[in-house]
Length: 178
Image (tube, rainbow, N blue to C red; front, top):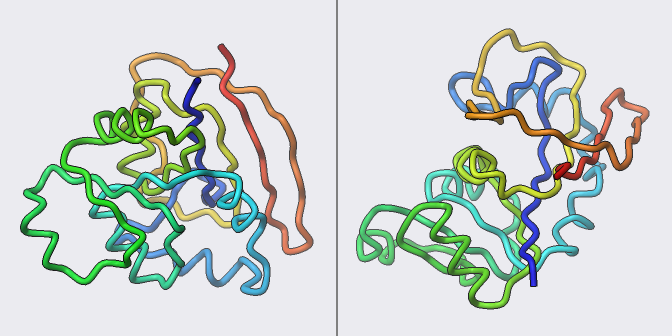
């Protein structure tokens, strides 16, 4: 059975995930705080989440809840991290994003939510992301940290759906073309 990796992310009109300092204050000032734009439904459609340790620490600081099954990978020694107070849903894996995905797939998880720029870029560079939901936020940042990194070859995606929200955000759902 095939593993499906998907992403769900907000980006600025010029393609940035965060400012250079990692903040997303621009997102908070534009997006409706009472609307999750389908994020809970997206998470409920997945079996597990895959995220790097560095990105998990950032995610935890925002107060966003961790799903029931969350795999956090790191190339650091696990013994150094194990002493930290992490939510019980987190399962630590030593290695990179690709090896972590292989371990998760071997354990029977098939629908994986990929979170954080590091994991997204690593899996996207290997064409391992199958679906993406991007919410375009009507702001131009000019500079910052991009969601997508450099690729060695073009990747083509097919639009599956789009939705415009009253607050000016537009959500685009894509599947990778083969």
